[in-house]
Length: 229
Image 1 (cartoon, rainbow, N blue to C red):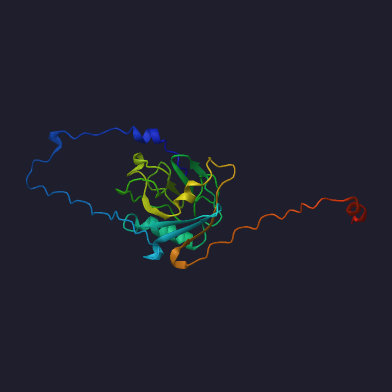
Image 2 (image 1 turned 135 degrees about the horizontal axis):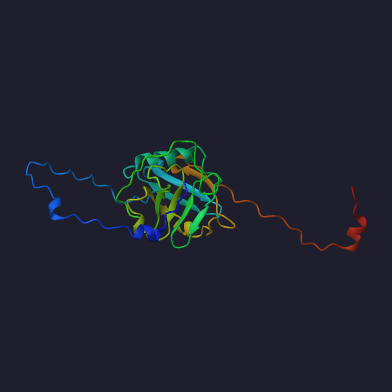
């Protein structure tokens, strides 16, 4: 589950050029059917199709809304939706956060090596680009190893296109994604306090109460009247 591909290596992939001799000359050869066109317009209204809106309530006080797009990657959307509804992501940290790149979460061990008890997913690579706000599944070198970990892109990383499964896009609260603490792992990692689907109508968790401090100065009388157990 460790997302460790070097971006530089991905950007230096070899280009394969087809020579004229490679083209079929037989007029009877059937033309290859073009792949279905994927929807590219993102519905920004979470009240539309709310069961396909992932809600992340973060420890930095923010609520992030992610539009899940089953047409892009149906099995990945199904997996993330299932885990979120079961509370799997609640309390998990963003364990790998690289400035100018992405924030990754979804590992119950917080190390980048873990996942859920469910089987790994078959890759659903698609033509959706890794632009700011894109949400994609992390994986190992094995294309079919995505499980529960996912990452949110800070800035475009087109070198990742067709190599990772993009399954959604942030439609609200990207400023809170930007505020996620950096590090691998961060010294003070940002957590997912609660993950849910918008259709569940879960309220935002209450912020933890600040520690109460008594700034009243201690007097000599206080010390004389104190008792020890």
